[in-house]
Image 1: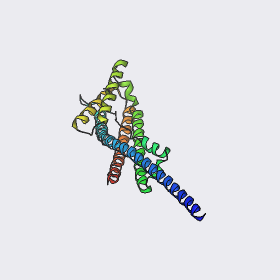
Image 2 (image 1 turned 90 degrees about the vertical axis):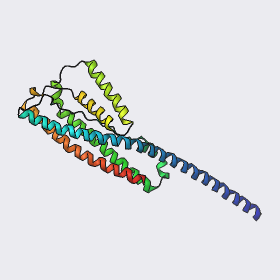
Image 3 (image 1 turned 180 degrees about the vertical axis):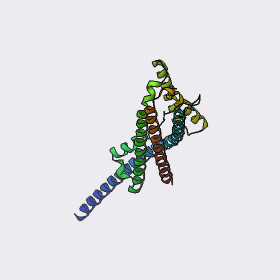
Image 4 (image 1 turned 135 degrees about the vertical axis):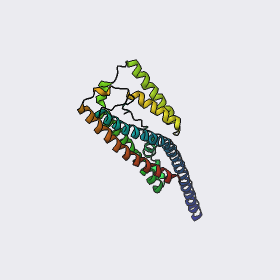
Length: 239
């Protein structure tokens, strides 16, 4: 009788052990899949960050140049080639994998320390996304006065230029920054900004534009600091 009970007990223990092993393997596989998703998304975001840093540098140069143009406009020393470039490119940093990992429950099977690192990165990415969108919206409001001063352009022309810009953005987002991608982005920004008649601007409109571009420069500096911080977080994760 005792032998029979012992055999049953051993059988139950083996069954429980096998079940626990199967669950452990399943959880480990789930965690590995989740980490692969996170790593892939972070790698895409690293490329996007480099492009956004390039776009930020281009934007800050354009904004500082715009302030100089407005200063010359006030002093009636405007140059023939002076123009205001206010288009700013930005590629949002993705967070789909982060949501999937949490919604699937896979986050529970990844070490707390590692998830904390990823959490800090995704929080930094979201700050950049929010900040960049705010800069874009503020600058668009400040430069809205230029819309009425832009030379007549057909809807077909506007659609064509916008389509070219979107295609170029898609290509630039797939590769790391280089001199060719910077030149291409410069060309897009110039075309999309148009060439309004600055001489028609009133002193009040000039004031508004100066305030907008000055705020943009301040925002450019803040965003740059966030970019550098995120770059450091990426580097720390890779160690």
